[in-house]
Length: 234
Image 1 (tube, rainbow, N blue to C red):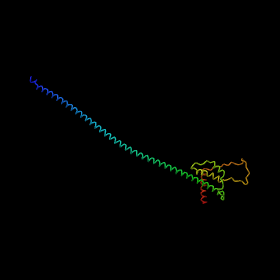
Image 2 (cartoon, rainbow, N blue to C red):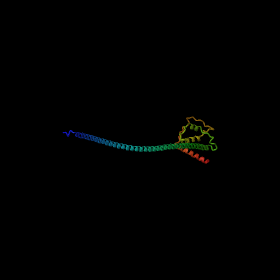
Image 3 (cartoon, one colour):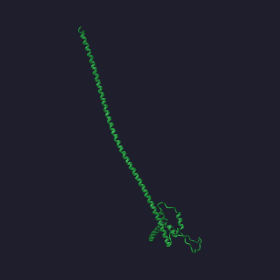
Image 4 (cartoon, rainbow, N blue to C red):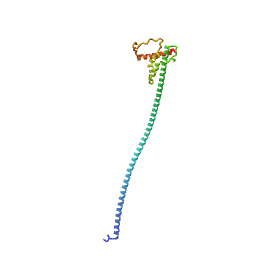
């Protein structure tokens, strides 16, 4: 009992209690250190996952950027091609308009030339018919000095003008009537007139109009005679 209560035993007891506390604190510190290490590892792992995710997003963004640049370049090329096609179409339309204008001008010139030819043919027809009729009636007289009959002038004044481009046809159709009027000339004057008769004593006379075919043949014959007389005169 004395040995247990001696001061030396007290020192040993105190030393043993201090060692136990040191052990407990060491264990607690070790546990905290391990816990901190685990938390750090988890944080590092989480950051690594975040880095992987960010790298994936960055690669996707770079890919989308490259695709957008490619699409933009393709659209620019299509725009240039469409602009060139539009310019070509505009040039073609301008050329077509110019060609149509030239064709219209040529057509107008041809119509004017044909009208001039028709007028010249009509003038030659009238000149030849007048010359032919005056030569038959009186070879020694001047055909220009003889005036047209009043019936022919009245007929020409009352008849409407022909349509555009049908002047020669109208003249040819009116040729036999004009030829008849020109051949008839002024009415003869009786030197010794016969005695007048009553209307009852004069028998009716039926006059048949010539057929269109005969009228055309007469006009063609008059034209042929005119050209023949003109060639003989030359």
